[in-house]
Length: 246
Ligand SMILES: [Zn+2]
Image (cartoon, rainbow, N blue to C red; front, side):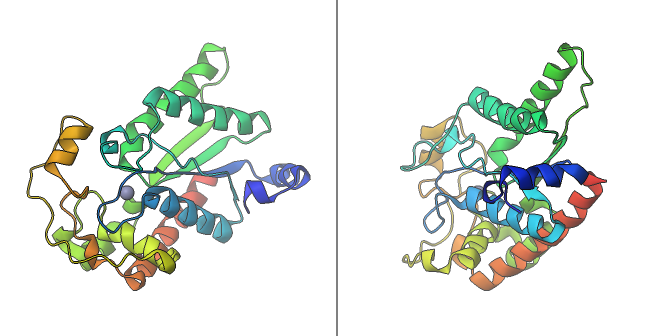
């Protein structure tokens, strides 16, 4: 059930017996030569919607632009500052907690968000604590879909060390499964840059990894693999969400 497809009365009746909500969060940033700029937002959103369908849980609107400043040397990438993202997360959570939600299950599609999302959780707890309330009156949990039980093993089985760490064949495959009309026909772009890990800033990132991917072979992505990865992520997160909601 999607929050933005409900009436306020439907949300009120949901809250009569459940107080957990799923919060998709992604990013809008370059994903190499054949990956969609929206990859991290699209994957998090659709996996979250499927987890919501399977559990009957309410799903909030996706936070689609994340902390992606290191991608800004590539055209079309968008970012918000860590401090902005902290406020967005905090105000999404506080809006919903005002109505009675108290368990927030974030499904994330972007590694670059992790530090900031965890800082946002601490800001939320600190605000409650400093106001003299119970710091745990609200509980937030972050899960990266690509690390869900079953997903990591499947990615390794499908792609081994060609999975890489950015613009991975797994995440590109999931978007190909969800949106086959967007599959890009691009000439073979060969192996990834052999630059070592680490970069100083956005310009240095582009210089080291000129086509945007990091150690990945996203040309190996297929919609069929994407379906398997998507289903593994949903299966893993459904069980985890049920434990969280108890
Ligand atoms: Zn990504």
